Image 1 (spheres, helix red, strand yellow):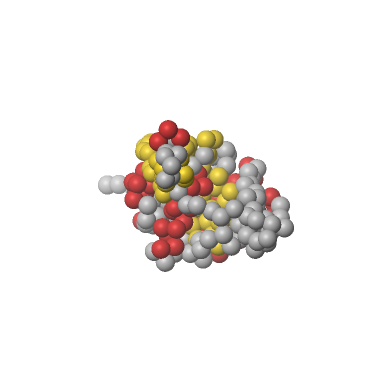
Image 2 (spheres, rainbow, N blue to C red; image 1 turned 135 degrees about the horizontal axis):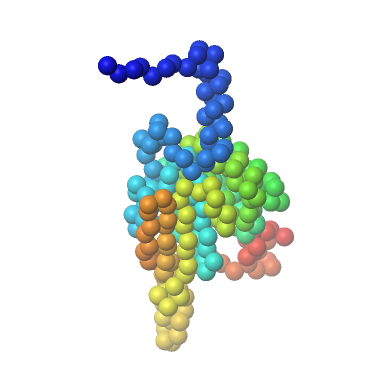
Length: 243
């Protein structure tokens, strides 16, 4: 004979208490994966080489991914991932806290360029919580610990994918690092035998998670940009501003 487990009193099993406990667990343990969420499919970006590096073949939904790029490569890879998602019909938003991306430089994700860091953080929270975007990217903003916790809660509520370029990885489920491999760039040669332009860039990417670590070198095509001239005020300069 086995003893039955005691039931909690009805007063301790109310929906309000359960919801409060759930929110407390998410805040205290942002990396914990709740059982109902294990069946949530990851977000495949369409960049096969990048997806193969990620656990389960894509960016986790409802969880934070942090990206550090001390030697470059993050913007190039994330832009390729955004374009892949757009080609598949997904909606993507990019919060540019440093204001380095032009407002109309190319047909790509929704670009949000707040005037200051605090507004960039708030914008990311709103976009994440809305659940209207498959992927939200945050760059040019380094949130404090409390800000990272708020972002973790917002992405958990919206159940989209979220990537933040930051050195703070405490609340991250997946951590990504990247760097350019300059000696593996492919260059186009001009008619006179000199280097005319770069054709492809090589990015070394490392992905780490709990019980997971993979690295690979990914080659990305290089895109050319027209230089801004004083007689062309409609073009954004290298700072992404239209003065």
